[in-house]
Amino acid sequence: MKKSQNIFFDLSTLAELGKEVIIGKTVRIRKPARVRIGAHSIIDDFTYVSCGLTIGRYTHIGAGGILIGGNAHITIGNFANIAPGCRIVAASHDFVEGGLAGPTIPPEFTDDSITADITIGDHALFGTGTVILPGCQIPEGVATGAMTLITPKTKLEPWSLYAGIPARFIKKRQSKKILVSAAKLIAARRGKE
Image (tube, rainbow, N blue to C red; front, side, top):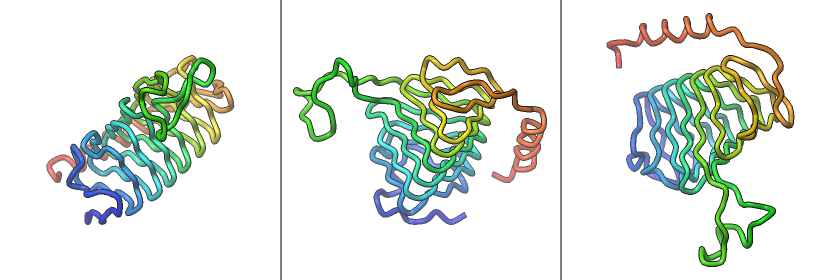
């Protein structure tokens, strides 16, 4: 598959770029040397990435996604689908105790931010507008409805659907068909990559 030219960075500067990856022409990756993208993954246009990022295989990040976190790292597993407009935030300002904030402020005038890596398991499925805050650990198969907020205090179980602000449990997801289909896809591609 042909890799399109990006207007913000040279794809060859990524730490790793798997086979048959599609990265939209207007995807902005601020630190490409800290980004690894697994085979058959897609990042749609107008997505912004400002932290370390590892994406597994067959993963999709929809248009207008924001993945930020300065020195933090976001890890997204295999077969994950992040809908358009999701926000995965691995660093944030302390709005209660913090001082000056923002990229325009010299470091000697800012306070520490709330920074923590985020891990998203295989087969995660996020509805549009979902927000994930610093330090979240998302188990395999978690799905969210549109406009869901997940904080590090949110108790998440594998293969479950959550929705709301704050996120609340809706129902269990059926994993068997998903896992069988993923295994068949990997087996069908074995030896062809």
